[in-house]
Image (cartoon, rainbow over all chains, first blue to last red; front, side, top):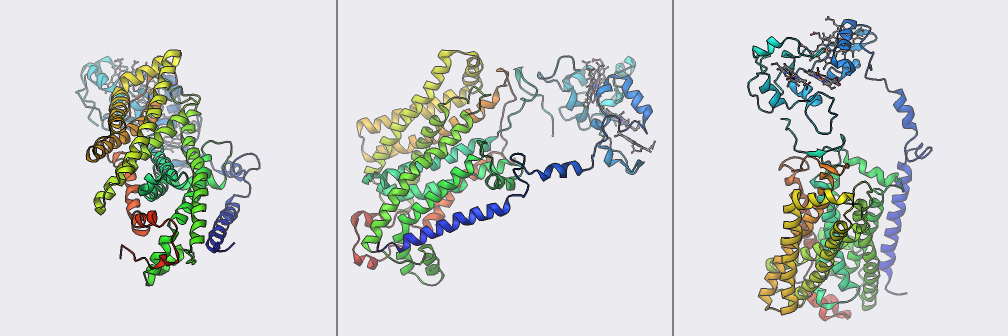
Length: 176
Length: 408
């Protein structure tokens, strides 16, 4: 076959490209890939070696038992502390308090769990925050609740509002 | 970030509150569709030898290539960790529908690149011969160092082109049919899960591809001061009309079947299409984007108007059809996520904002990128310069190398 030099060249180029791809692919496949399925099996051990960051439900008990009792007594009994605070590992190291625990004090935080959503079970207490704040006598605050402090009226650990009078007096929910 | 009181209605499952496949996932089948559509036009010339499509023979290949380069851009922009996209090629799970894309995409890219090389080889060599310095080295490299443009070599090129283009047709169909399959194979969603989905996607892809070509062809003729080939626009319009008829028929048949069966999903789908998406579906996809071009193109086909009128009609219908196909992608991708899996309620609406990462600006930039790339492509490999000459000298003799370069 004459005049096919260019076809040979491009053919070789394609073969080099494909073998190059296959070669690098083989190099890049992690060694333990595929032992138990389409994933890297070594990863299982790596995950198991990671120190847990959260203290789980009872993680705070040994040092904050009064808080725990307080929480257990109210409607937030099933809300774990770390939902509103931060993971235990940001606060305690080797069973000693090492860093301050952060506290999220914005209304957004409460709204995350208490916003009215049709997808939420009816039994869960839900509010439309704009309506709620107007109803309980706080002046209209618009839709940005990063400054609204819900626990002016609701103690976060035991949120059922106890004193109807506080409410009637019309506390300014915006005040910090 | 203000929390907005959401606008959903009816009964939703807790995990289906939001639309998570954004505008970018609308762009992805859209751009992939333009690839397939442009390629199929180029095949009409390169495989079936329809001479009337010669003027867009190269443009369609170049455009297809440039669209292909950017077909993954919206996906990568959507991913939180774009670099992990390569894992799907290094360690594909062959039972995953998503993994198919890497294989189809790369196969198609290879075929297209080879075909482009064979089609442009003669030009590459001629340019290399007529230039010096770095430019010459660059084109010499592109030519892989072989300067053979004898009649036999060119005959081999044509044969190779034909073979590649004919492998390319099923590859293009597979690439885009696959995108439709991704949606069609999601059995949890009655608006997506139909075996017709890949076919509808494929045909509307061809429609959008032809429409984009007509627009690009007319604009490039205008810019470069050439005259528009009547035959070519006429042929493209007829083809566009034919594919549009099939596309609309399929799209309507799908709805008619759903409506007539009136199974449990029809309740939600009908209120999705005729109230939630009435503008996008009835207005854009069916009326403005579907029936108006259908009539405009029918005027071209049936009444053979004078060239200026025909060109205007073709241009308007192409623009409308680009909108139609985009609306169709939107209605499928976004529409399919608007209702809950409960089939009894609607999620929050979806409106991309302008500046966010997956917003309108990003979409516009990603859509413009292939057109910009086509301009660059045209500077490296001429899209039109040699066409007239080649049409005349189908079998260039040994004197061919003396032909001066028009661009220099």
